[in-house]
Structure formats: C-alpha cells, structure tokens
Image: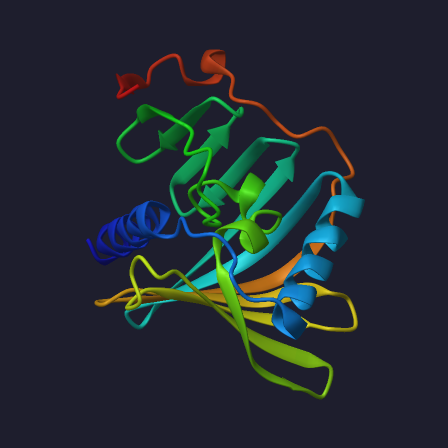
Length: 205
C-alpha cells in the first residue's frame, strides 16, 4: 500500500509539473550557460541511460531510464514505461495492465518525458544560479505562471552532468538523485505488445 501511494504521489507531481512549467527563458548569465552546457553534454552522447533514486515523503525508490532520440524506457518498481515519440505505454506488472496515453511533447519532466528532461530546460524555464563552488553548481528554474513550483538542479561541473534534480510544488518535494549516466551500448528496447498478451489495454488517447 505504501509503495502504491508513493508511485501515485510521484506520478501526480510530475503530471502537475508538466502542466505548469511552460515559460520561456527570460534571464541569461552564468545560470543559463551552465544549463546549456549540460544540455550539450547529453546531445553529444546521442542515446544514454541513467539510474536514479527517487526520494519523496520519507520514502525511497530505485529506478532507471534510457533515451534515444524522442524514444525512452523507464523502469520503476513494478512499472515499465515506454515512449515512442507519439504514444506513452505504462506497463503495470502488479495490475497486469497497459495504459496508453499521448506523449506530452512539451514536458521536460524526467519521469513524464525523459527524452526532453535535459535538452529543453533552457527553453522552458527561467534559470537562476544559487551557488557555485568546489566543482558543483546549484541552479533554480522557475516559471512566472506558478511561482510556488520550481525545479532545483545540482550539477557536477567537471562532467557537466546533473547529480540531483528536485521538483517542488506547494505540497510535495520529489528528489531525483542521479546515480549514474552513460552512453547507450545497445539499441533501446521498444514496446512489444506480444510480450504482454494477457495484459488488459486501457487506452486514454
């Protein structure tokens, strides 16, 4: 029951953030430079995969995701999520259900559309540098539409890669600790309906 609550809280928070974080960058300077440099690091990798730990409401959950172009795959608890650029396939192993939704093309949230999680930050958010020292930087990203919600990005300046992303709303803070990032060394798996023949399909498209 606790794991189900945690999954619901995480997915609900990312859905909310996907709706409110749509604002154009209005500030330049060091913060914008850092975010752009991070984005270029991912671009040069082409496809990449990452492992992470989510911390929310005192609970922790390990997961992984992989990205190649506009396609992605997420693993978290009993769930697998596939995206092909048009459709999002949420595979719930516990309920034996597959939920189909339309991909949130504008979303830059790491669990709703990781294909955009890093390369769209500079076009969606207003960045502010909070701290830079000892090879690390802390950047806040906000939207004027909802000042109470924000993202805080912790960057490793030696690798120009994120080590932590925190998503804040009025009621919840979701911390995503990036444990590893590396280039893909195999083709990205795609959703295969034949692998889930006894699963119920729920289509919300």
